[in-house]
Image (cartoon, rainbow, N blue to C red; front, side, top):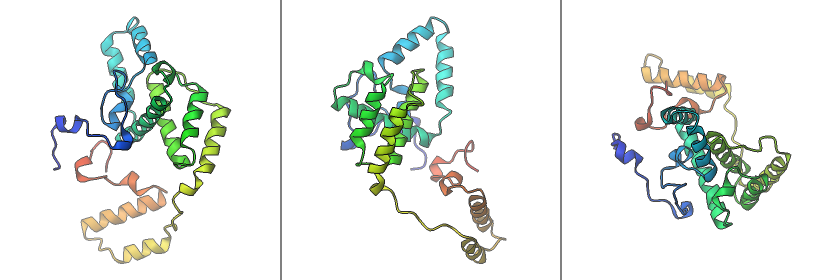
Length: 224
């Protein structure tokens, strides 16, 4: 169905077995894209209480919503996956909620080490970006320029090198010419395909950055 109700869109789905987590007041059962804005911590709660002494609650809520909207929906989902893996790791290692934010360098490096070799370096990098964004949204310090973490990530990247996708052949001008030879430019759809191909090629873009994921996910704010 292309037209779901807002209630259906927000209802949490049953988690896959490898995505299970012990939910509590800090981590409600929500969709991946909503974790960044709804998952909290003792530090975040204390920070909010402190902020409420200085500013009205509605202003804090509006600011939080504005910051959350700075991330694209797909980015929120990717970051939500990183938060899930991070808290699964913390649950396994019995890390108290008080230690999960602000996360010390050693804990973050331990998280990286626990997945090194089992996932690619780019996956770990995406997960860390999600944890970092979660810290930023809650005004928690993050070890931005840590050489310690840089070394951990470098090693994890090397250990996960066997999981990288094989490089694909580049698109060439010959490919464009072959496409053009099979298009009729008095057909509006063919014109759109040709414009997309040229923009993607000469703009050095990925197709996913220029196309619509599906008809139901079209947004006039983001899609041409």
